[in-house]
Amino acid sequence: MAVSSRTYARQRDLSKLFIALAVLAAVVAIAPIAAAVLGYGSRAVAPKTAFATAPSGDYAVIGRSEAGADVISVASAANPTSVTEIARVPHLEGFASSGAVSPNGKLLALVTVDSGSASHPVASLKVVNLESGMVTQAAADVLPRQVPVWDPAGGHIVVVSNPGSDTAAGESTVLRVKTDGSDAARLATFTRVLGVYPVGFRGDALAMVVIDGRGSTLRVGDKDEGLISPYITRDWNLSPDGGELAFIETQTADGVQYVARTFSLAGSSDMQAQSAGAAVSALGTAWNPRTGAPVFGVEPETPGTSGVTVQSLQAGGAGAGQPGFDVPMGFSNDGDHLFVTRWSGPSFETPGQPVLQIVSASGRSSFENYSRFYGWAAR
Image 1 (cartoon, one colour):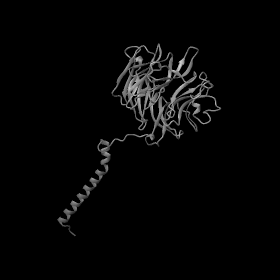
Image 2: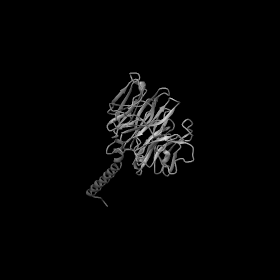
Image 3: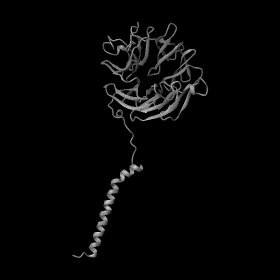
Image 4: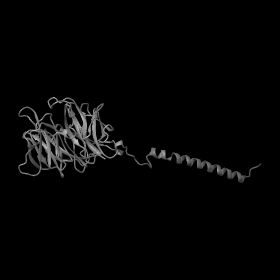
């Protein structure tokens, strides 16, 4: 049967319509792919670590060295066997990074030796986002092996520049910088000193220990608070309210001895360092958030150690019947857990082998493969 010209035209128009619809459907189908390739119509999605969605609680931020990198991980205090890797930060072989967790528990400031040589190491300040795993460089050429200090708001980090690279020989400059590396400022510069060590904040004022020919001096902001010891000191820990400094005094008058000390910043004109009870032989300091008192890692069989040994934390005595001693590193925010380095030996002179542990009233959990504790993060 013959097809009329009108019918043929209608069929031709319908064919064109079907073809057009098919082409349109194909374009719509591939449009998201094309847009993604070209960068249109898409929103950047930041990576997330398992820590970003972890249950609430306290987490220890720890590290180990592996193949020339620091492996940064978090471990739940409630379930220490569950360790989550966050990031890997390359470093010069043999130089593990030191670090500190931000006040909000979401960032880790790391001082990482990432260039130079074993005899002339060069370090950088890096910031690790614990929720995304992203690593940002905030400053270059800082003093290796130092522990960076966060300001109370968590927006800035304080570090000391590398004295060996300063124009003026022997200068130590204290720097403050934002987490993204901006807003860098010099807070203080010291010459002819053995070392400058920021230890925390009292209000808005930075507290730091300066070691020189006089011994160890405490400086808060622009004010010299006086000599805290005629010796070299170590393991400084400022109380949460900034009113007292716990530290270890390294006495050398009769061999090397490590003595637990505290120093009050109450404003008295006759301020001086006090020993913790008797002349306690100890290493390591931590502030108990429940009691507000400092805790020291006491050498075994040291007389007069009541109230300062971390062995009172665990029911029945931590490590009762076992050789060794603890060096405290930091309490969790609720005070229920204390992170320590447990040494297997009988004394500071013969320390044995170390292992990182979380100690609580219910027992201990060890982290055999880890060597660094950076602080606690709370979710």
